[in-house]
Image (cartoon, rainbow, N blue to C red; front, top):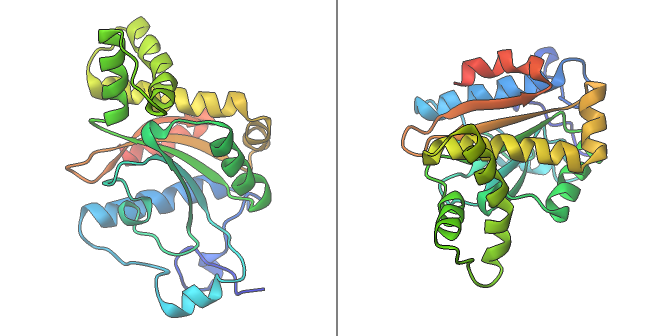
Length: 232
């Protein structure tokens, strides 16, 4: 067994390991992500948990405090924009943060086996997957190859946006993030059960490529929305 991984990279009573079994862990994990993003935005990076001693400490086991289900965009590297290190984040990335069985299985592993208390759906402005879906719907021409699976996964969010009267790209991105959160909870009984039990939360965030900051979109349970206000 390796040494426990502490949130701040340094052991101490205020730096206990955050798992789903620690009271208040989802909100505390979210606060850690927000704080790390603020450091990134203000160029006050700490690069925690990135040294050789920590690498050795987490070699035997992992206890990530957050799952990031993010877009594969090369400018959206979770460990960088949240200023985290080895063992901190369990990252699953697909174009347009689309969710299939493999993604859900990865999330369920982190939440039920590793006891990770927070799941974040991370989208971003000017999303290429959303643009591709809009172009496909507008022209009636689906893309070729496996790219069609990505577009098909985004199209339902376009329908929701149309019903809501939202036409701008970033507004559609927000709807797609929120729909991804709801789809994950609907499709995964294990994830929904952990959220209902209070050991885990699922939140949606949108990243601004130029500014480098995350913005709040949605939260489940809804009570966590108060903590998300500070990320807006």
